[in-house]
Amino acid sequence: MATTPRIGDSKVLESRETDDGTTIRRRRVSPDGRRFTTYERIELPQLMVRKRSGNREVFDRDKLATSVRRSVGKFLGSELAIEEVVNAVEERLRQDGKEIVGYEEVGNTVLDVLAEKNEVAYVRYASVFSDFKTLGDFERILRERRAK
Image (tube, rainbow, N blue to C red; front, side, top):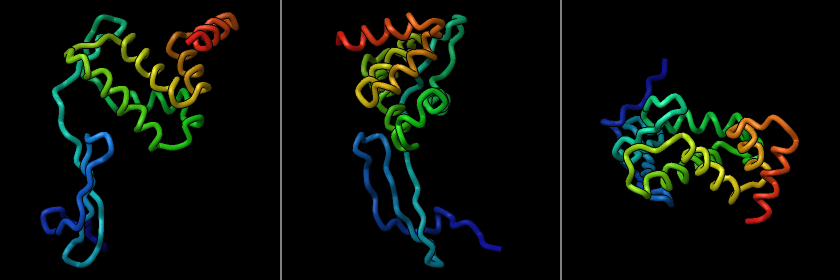
């Protein structure tokens, strides 16, 4: 039975920082010659989200990625594209230096990022986030988008 390489026993072959500077990718080799990659993310102070109910919870990157994937995944094309959206949203939310952000701010930031990447994804996410009920809701968001 094969064993999983242990990080402590491995040698680093190469280290690279991602373009956004939030993650370090390390290529490693174990004593038996197997190669593998580890990712290290810079741990930032906790960001809290004030939910619709008024409750607060820790900003959850995985939860946001799932939301984006379910709403617009196929329009972005890959998991990497979804990760880029999540990275951009988190970065913009942290820029203000606030410890607590409202769910509306999170949703609107997702919309801003999606508007730059894919207009269809933008409209789809808007329809879920804003709970569209009528064709008029879609027409309104399209008018607003075209006006920008």
